Length: 494
Image (cartoon, rainbow, N blue to C red; front, side):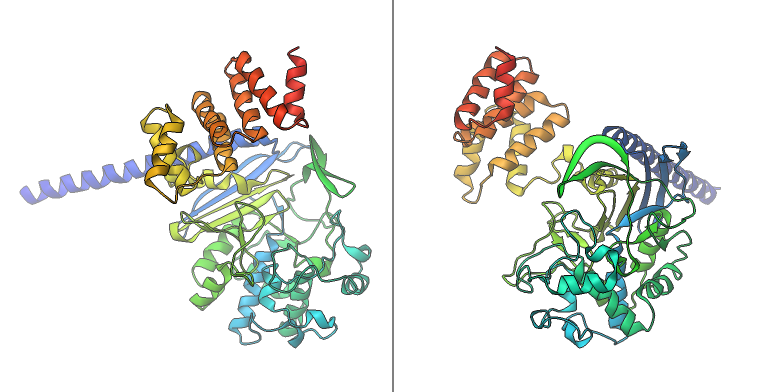
């Protein structure tokens, strides 16, 4: 009886723990749903797919909103979305597969495989093509239209006549020409068109039944509509805040750069297979695939402060905490692989301009709370130090605390921009009084900057302190007479 009683208690304990874990998982899932719906409302995203992979298994697969607005078609798991430049990640895998087959090396010069190229292209390596560090001229124009009216031969002849943008390896410059060349190399070495090689060696082994190459001209089952708030006027992309239908045409030769249509479920299958070694047999292949490429001077560069590096077809998020490999596409789709956390998140939308890469970290924060912006994620080491001191002192005496930290830490230094950005994060979190203290600190640290007074004044106004808001807007305008935000405010208050 005694042993049975102990065993009974153990079974009860196991059941309680299992139930507790199930409730935690359900709560996390529900919280993500609320977050996603709020973000869709805020950004005017019609339809969205989400996949979360944790510890090598599909943790969450959800669909939201409408795949098609005109006919009010809801988003379902089979709804397909264009992933645009995320296609480049598949090209990276394809090149690594050819390397594993002994058909090329990523450090090879492209002249070993492509002969009809200008002399100053011949030293460029495959790795430089993959990482957008080749210095090649781009085969699209400022409106992102393919040169030569989409005709391959014309496109190739036109781009070969253009000057190099830089020396190979000198700087990061996003480039589609390199991916056209990679497509030719894959086709030549595999004996199959690159689209067929990727289909046979990635789509089929992963059972990606809804995934294919295509564009707006193709009939694609369950294809979601495409919408945009971004329009191109005279070569400049402008967000007018209104929804427009978006159409994209990708000539077949251009589809290594952008051309895959998929679902979050299919992409999760692909990521799991990649992680399990089913697509790349050698662990060093995956490591090389995700390693950010250094430029000739030794530093790493990328698109912006988030995707600040680039590997072999994979943009990367280079940082001490929770680094990621992060393909993005068409300002509408993104996936983040967090290798250290055994977590991957896929977000596909049908809105160009939604830029989901900027909120995927927040989704990850539901699994790792330290990744929440409200908990200081994304702030520099020094800013986190100041944040902690301010929290402990209830955001009082910010300048005194800053001075104290700086006196005891010679390496302590903060920029105007990072303090200002943090202030706006606090405003987004409805922490206006805390934000006010941060903006005020910035005016004391950078008294010659018009921008810091403008931000401080804006927050004063938000808190109803119009008198001091006017004083600080005037100070901002004195420092920068072209500050229209300040001049418009003061004009309205006359």
